[in-house]
Length: 390
Ligand SMILES: Cc1ncc(COP(=O)(O)O)c(C=O)c1O
Image (tube, rainbow, N blue to C red; front, side):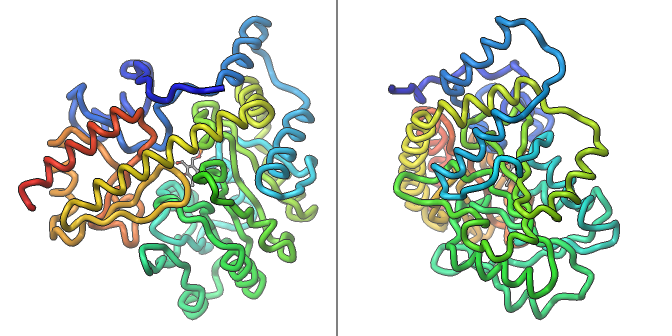
């Protein structure tokens, strides 16, 4: 089956954060601004997902959701066939999105005042969620080498205070789309074991690898350390269904799982009925849609990287996955405000790099999950905006 990712859906005025949030966040109500910030795609979800929702509507029942066995199997089967992790379906738990699950893990394994390690720059909710819960964020700077991020576990080891409880890990990485190697993941898990830390692996971007690139789940890279592992993931990024607010929490070790289960049970919430229908239709029936969207995004990334890298003073991190490109403007010597202003004047709204904290100044993160024509329009605007510097 072929899918049309070139169609621009009419998203303005439809409660779409990416479009309708431009005014409150960027302070402009110009309807021509191209949103390249919030991490979802402008594309329609797969036909199977839309049919599954339609079936719910046709039934007409919108009450509480019970019995997750089918979804548990769908998740386990997807992980096994796509990513090589033979996870027991009995390990799967449901949260109100991944960030909410992040909070559950923090609540389970740390107390206010405890330290949470975050490799930065990284997805901003990691910081916010930890700080909102009274935890102390310790930023472990990622080192950039040959256009790639690397963790510096030696420096982190030397900086430990003994108050750390959890290491948070974004795999694949946002921003920049890095796929961590099995060796790097293994070393991180060994570091956690050595220092008695819980390893929280956020794998939400696992289904956005570019064609030919494999993602290694943390549980596959380091099976010897699953006794300290909690995985958070979802269908939300890979299948563009973030509004379903349905996250997955997988704790393969029984004693770790029992602890998280207590926190989840205390919340007394049941899964979102529509989110569960979406999740099953994604993992059971939308594999070919996933392959098609990854190919489209990969080509978007190729075009964006080539054109942006040709602007003097601008360099683009090489991505292996995601649609969240990390672009370095620091050689231009502008302040972060000037950089953002120049983009907004060009009617393009990327995420400011400073949101991702350490190493973010002088950078912008661009969401490339746009119809090709819109992406080309955005690139042309940026080229023009920086043309006077050439
Ligand atoms: C690494 C990462 N984790 C979590 C999320 C958000 O997850 P959710 O919307 O399910 O809370 C994002 C969104 O961009 C993300 O990039």
